[in-house]
Amino acid sequence: MDNDDFDTALVSAALTLAQDRGWSSVTVLAAARQAGLALPEARRRFPLKASILLRLGRMADDVALADDMICGDVRERLFDLLMRRLDVFQQYRGGLQSVFRTLPMDPALTILLGGATVESMRWVADAAGVNTTGVVGFVRVNMLVAVWTHTLRVWEKDESPDMGSTMAALDLALDKAGRFGLFPTGADTNTNQSGLADLEDVTDMDTAFASTTISAPHA
Image (tube, rainbow, N blue to C red; front, top):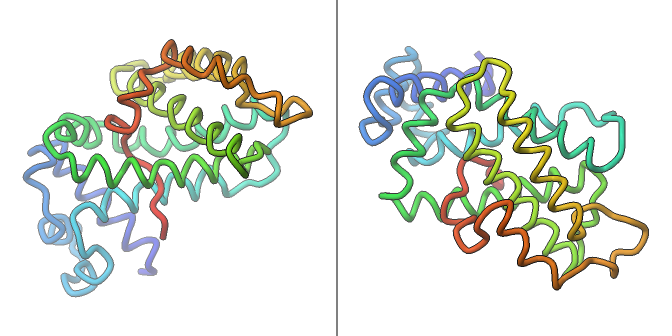
């Protein structure tokens, strides 16, 4: 078993336990035993319980970024990249719902995952062709975080097998963000900074980071 297979097995076991018992009851040791994995290796690769969620985020990013030949304009590429991440999350839906219920009572984990989400969305934006440099780039990355957070909230409640409501929510969120400069239109300086407040129609910007969930880690 290589490292990727090891990590996938442990993440899957942990989120299955989370679905059955609740995230607060999950430990790395219990997940390793559930998956029949060596405990010393599990401790080395997952030193913290939060490492499980960070690794899932990295797995989602790996899938999203694996094919660098995505066609279409920037908006279409962003849609495809974000939906690829959600396709990975969909495999662990029950466990992640348990995680979401825990986050309001675990501010440290929420902050950790929020910071990782910013880096994840920077990668997604770069891959889609969005300029993320400078002040305008900083604003665009944060707009994409808001788009992702809003879409994830809808996905959490979307019981349809084809994630129809989720795709519709992502479409709408990207449309609104695009009107305020998320997509390049030839001149980065044309970003409508005064309109950024209207992104509250997409999601509450003051709570976007507090409720941001699973994303790719730095490592």
